[in-house]
Length: 370
Ligand code: ATP
Ligand code: MG
Image (tube, rainbow, N blue to C red; front, side, top):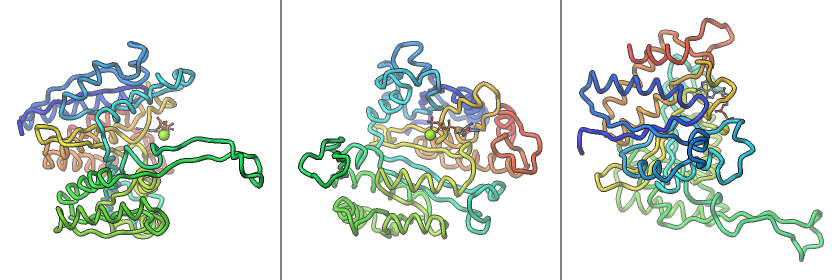
């Protein structure tokens, strides 16, 4: 792997550009102080791209995304775009990128910073030190399965209302195996434990899921510890004793629900990073897009109030998973931890006892200083 990292930055809309300014400060720091070399390109996505090109993700932008090591995205959308046609909505820009890059593994860490443990929906004793990673299959399952639709239920006179809504949960063994490999690879860089969640007790796709994950384990990753759990039990365990988990791998629908539940273990939306990974490219790096979990937050956009940490931690994930610089990622995460421990808070992290929040820029500066 080369020592130069190419990165496409897509700030997007709302608070996206505001938080991205802080990430750029961090990138500059790593270039100046750690001799790392980033080739950074910036482009438009979402509403900003629609305003400029009439499309939420222009072809040139997609080409750039396909040519770099990693994409870092801020957020897309805003009320001014609500009335647009579905095909050009800001969110479509994001979907286009995900689809064209074929990003099938969505990574959502739930990490509890000690200074924020009281923000959790759970007691401090349950979440202190929590560090889990949920890997959600992102390109298949019930969200995409055919047939789907709402039909007249003609032959069923007992159906009051007379309609039926249909979705299909469909997984191929190949789709399961590739996301399982992502999870095992990630576990190999962590505590080495994977828990796979499905409902093999009631779903055929769940049975296949369990068998294929087990197959990948037995044939390719025998040294990783693998367990299986029904997703409903998994939901319960996430709230009862979340620290029992290291990496959780699950399908698109269960992953959607379980990762939101896990997010609430750690506190504010302003703290949550994510990554979406695809197949390995020729240079050995996976196709990748990193973005904060939060949206464009139009209610606070332009006011310097946004918490940049979710986006900064997303960049830390890029350092770890795209650039193979887990050391730099850990340094960055430690800097965030130290600033929080010093009591530095953006408005979203203020407890009921108040205090004076810092601005987006001050938070970024403090993290750079740390
Ligand atoms: P989307 O549909 O794009 O996901 P959303 O409406 O679900 O957007 P967000 O845009 O994420 O949600 O905002 C939800 C709430 O969280 C808002 O009140 C917003 O101000 C707050 N919020 C989101 N991100 C941040 C952040 N980085 N810092 C501070 N507050 C935030
Ligand atoms: Mg949302």
